Image (cartoon, rainbow, N blue to C red; front, side):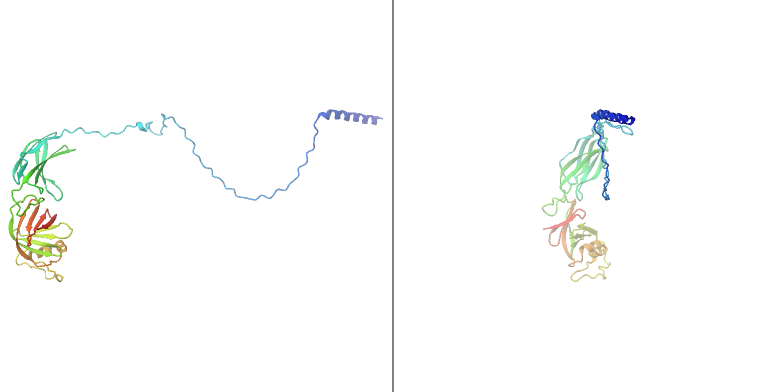
Length: 330
C-alpha cells in the first residue's frame, strides 16, 4: 500500500514538471565531431618583401618663416641678401686740352715745334712713333711738364707720315693723343715711281761694283762700296734675307777642298764661300751654287724702311725691314 502511494506521488510530480517545461525550448543534442585526416603540408618558399621606406612628409612652413639653423643665423629670404657692388672709381680729372704742331707738312729731317697742355697730372710723355716689323711702336721719348713746347726733327715712316703721340697716366688709366704730319722726302729715289712702303731715302743713291751668284734656293749679292754681302732666300723660313760684312781677305783659302759639290753644282768661293761655309743655316737654306760669280755695275740706295738695288738684268730688288721680306720687280 505504501508502495502504491509512492508511485502515485512520483507520477503526479512528473505531470507537474511536464506542464512547467512546456514553455522551454527543447534542448537538441549536438553531434560529436569526427576526425578527418588533413593532407600533408607542402613546403613552399614565399619571398620576403623588403619594406620600401617612404619619406616622411616634411611640414610645410609658412612663406615668411624659415627653419632655424643649427649654427649661426642665416637670412630668412635669399632674395633679400645684400648684393655686393664694386666700388666705383672716381671720375678721372685727367684730360688733354690740346696737342698740336706748328705745321701740317714738313720735309724729312726738318725741325718742327710741338705744343701741348694737359690737366690732372704733373708730367706727360711724348713719343715718336716708329716703324717696326708689324706695326708702329713708341720709340724716342721725351718727359715733359703739363704744358709747353718741344722742337723735334721729322722722320717719315714708310707710309710718308711722321707721327708723335702725347701720353698721360695716373697709374690706373692712360690717355693718348696723336699728331700726324705729311712728310716730304729731302732725297729722291733713283727710280720711279717712288715706293709707297719704304719711306724716304736716307741718303743719295750710290753707284758700285757688284757681284752676283745664284744658288739652288736663293742668291747672293756683294756690294763693293759697302763691303756687304746680302743673302736672299727663296724658301718659306725667316728671315727672308740677311746681310753680312765681307770678312774675306786676300791670302785666305778661297774654298774648302774637302767639300765636293754634286755634278752640275759649285762650292761658292772667296767672300761668298766664307759666309756659306761658316754659317750652317746659310749653307742649308741656300744649297749649292748653280753658276759661277758674275760681276756687274749697279746702283743702290737705302731708305727708312728698305734698301733698293739693281741686279745684273736691270731688275729692281727691294730688301725690306730687318730681313722681313724681299722682292724683285722690273
